[in-house]
Length: 256
Ligand SMILES: [Zn+2]
Image (cartoon, rainbow, N blue to C red; front, side, top):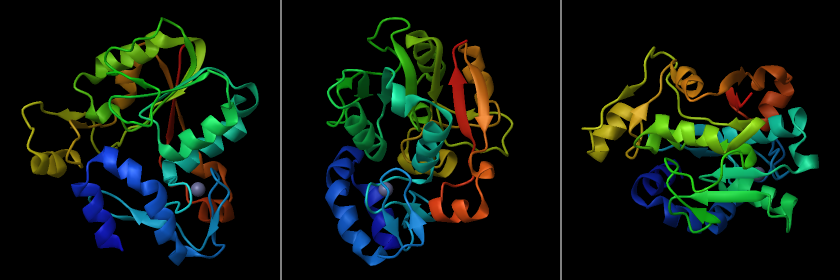
């Protein structure tokens, strides 16, 4: 199972993976019948979550029911407990939308036009644009969800400024990237385009950089106030096991 997952992730284009994962993963999930884990996004109970990862497989990661990963469950849990998003339904711009979150947000928002999904090429998104040039008016959205995208973007600082521009004052966003907190500085080199070299140096074949501890500074330079929230630390040990949300910080940006 692990080898199959790793091979698929590294050899099948992402847009095709998105199409087939919706029915293929739940079939594979038959092997995970049980009640030791609970997905906070879809409510499914399973024995464990499935392994997932491009280079190093993480155990207990992927929900076989809705395809949520640790970070998606962390986001959902935090949004449900610490924001009014689920009740107030503010205007959300969800860039590079994760299938698990998108499906549930679409259901929540129903026919209202206030949930906007966008991607460079995903057939599942409402809008298609490059995040370095967002075709939306200044201050037109209340909330931005944009995860694991900036490491793929050519000019991430420009993309951050665009995110700041379209967010209204008082708005907030979740902007996660893969981080190597042992690095002081972000490492990037545009001359490295060979996929195997990018995997070796940046952690994935289509990444352009690996962020260090200066990630927050880049967000601040774009205008954001940055808050790091240790969501897992706020849970009981039983909840941490049950929900398997990982131990990464949630990075919340605000436009004050
Ligand atoms: Zn789920």
